[in-house]
Length: 461
Image 1 (spheres, helix red, strand yellow):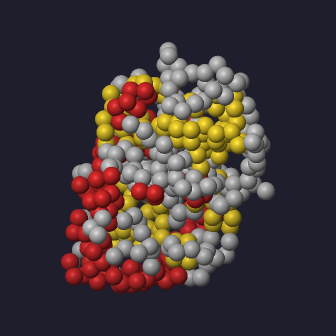
Image 2: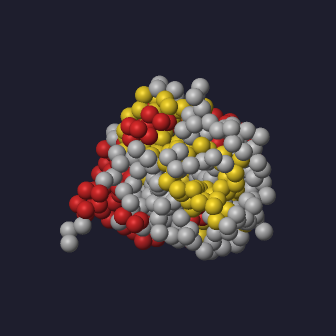
Image 3: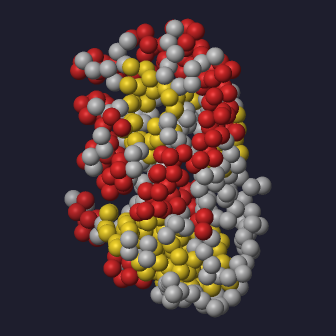
């Protein structure tokens, strides 16, 4: 049984690898959809990104390191902006956020979604206009809401009745009328190629549609008259390739919009369909381009609005992974290569679950390639693992690498822009890697490598 990538059991895994993984005809070949658009093999066989050899990056910045193709990120941001010209595109900052990325996103005309005080502070310090920021979170503190109000954040996504009361009191004290959306739990869960439509949602986010809480929340905000209720919000999952889940979600949330209109005479002007658009981590993944997503989502909303006799609301979406995920790869150095009784070959690198927890946490699948040179050796089915004191410290569960892979080689893992640095840790007291942006053959450090001094500076014992 094969479950979706976001779940705990990503099936078809055995000693010989998953059923979809086949030995490559050329172990040096790159699968284009897995890599940043400016990554290729140079004349000497090493990978280059925007014309810069990864061996130079390793020498200058060390390994492991997250390598960002800046033009690739910018072009993916523009792809969404251009595919959704009449839609507010919010970059979901939780995928990866730093001040340099905030500036890139702002310069490409996108909005920004944050979900914590720290993300909000990063956005504001980088100069993102507050009116282009949306603030998510199921447990926003009084301090966080106060900062959002004082900064003039454009919209706050309400997640509980406690938060409605909390924000209403703060807004009344300040004499402001912030724009808000109500997050609706629509009973649809979508991941990869599957979605499940249920009557209830057992999760911490949002107001239940089936139980009536979402309608009650909208009525409360409207009746109080302090907050400016702009619309409804739904988010149905992650790593989604199939838009059928969005169709069910839109139908349910627009039915609620019609209910609010009929009960209070208010037709809400906005609708946020969330994010979760998938990317290619391996050859089994086939994501749709933004233009195709836009076509499908627009058709869904137009159809459902017509069915409810509603004016089509102003839409917003929240891609994060789909913009930054493919724009980054992680560069490692091999430390040991170990054959275990002919059953499996383990290739150990100098990072691991502290810089990419997704394989251990979600059983996610990744790809890899020998990065510092080309090889004429036969393909070898290997498992790329980290240096941490955990048997589950796996970076790439199964991949064909050259049989002559050896200590000192560079290995690159694509698709690591989303959530890897955001979820990175200091497990085993390993400092977190840097983020290096490359553009026009030049590299610049946008997040520096942590040091042992950084770790010890926090230890006041």
